[in-house]
Length: 308
Image 1 (cartoon, helix red, strand yellow):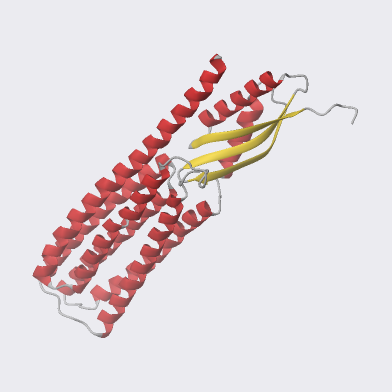
Image 2: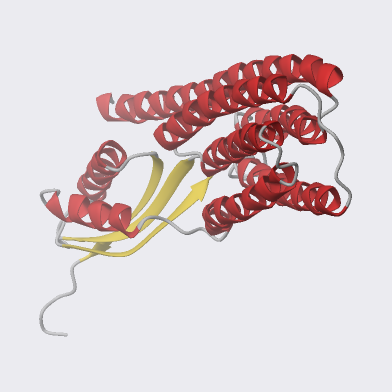
C-alpha cells in the first residue's frame, strides 16, 4: 500500500513544482512590466520637452515592450490549467506560441527603427536639448537591461524559452535607448546625421538578436531538446539496479516542462509488481536527475531468451 502512496506523493510534488515555476514566471513578468512602464513614462515626459523623434521611437518601443509581457502572462496562466479530455497534455504549449508573438514583435521593432532612421537621413529634423535626450536614453537603457537580466535569468532557471526570448527582446530595446544617447551626442557636437545612422546600426543589432531568439523559440515548437539531457536520462536509467537495457528514449517540452518516455529491458522472471516497482524507480531517478523533467512514461520489456 505504501507504494501507491509514493506515487501520489510524487505527482503532488510535481504539480507543486509546476505551479511554483509558473508563479515565478508570472512574478517576473509583473515586475518587469512595471519597470518598463515606469521607464516609458519617464521617457515620455522628456519627449514632450525635446521633440526628439529618436526618443519618441524609443518611448513607443518601450511601451510596446512592456505589453509583450501580456501574451506571455496569459500563456503562463493557461499553462497552469489542468489537462482536459480535449487538451490531454494541458496548455503548456501556449507558452511557445507566446514566444512566437515576442519574436514577431522584435521583428516589427527592427523594421520600425530602420524605417524611422532612413526617413530621418533623407529628411533631417532639428532635435532640441540633446543632453535631455541623452539622459532619457540612459534611463531607457537602464530600465531595459535590468528587466532583460531578470527575465533571462528566471527563464533559464525555469526552462522557459519564451521568457528568455522576452528578456532578449528587452535587451534589444536597451540597445535602442543607447543609440538614442549616441545620436543625441552626435547632434550636440554638430553632426545631425548621427541620430539616424545610429538607428540603422541598432537595426542590425536587433536582427542578430532576433535570429537567436527565433531559433530558440522555433526549436521548442519542433520539440527540440538538449542532447545532453537525453544522454543524462539514458545514463541515469541504465544506472538503476535491475535495468538491463534502455532504448527508444524520447523527450519533448510542454511549456517549460520536459516529458520523457522510454523502454527498459528487465529480467523476464520478475513479477508484474517487481517490474512496476523498478519502472517507478527509473521514473523517480530521472525526474530528480534531469533538470525541468516532470513526467516520465516507462515501458518495461522482458529480456529475450538466449536461444532466439
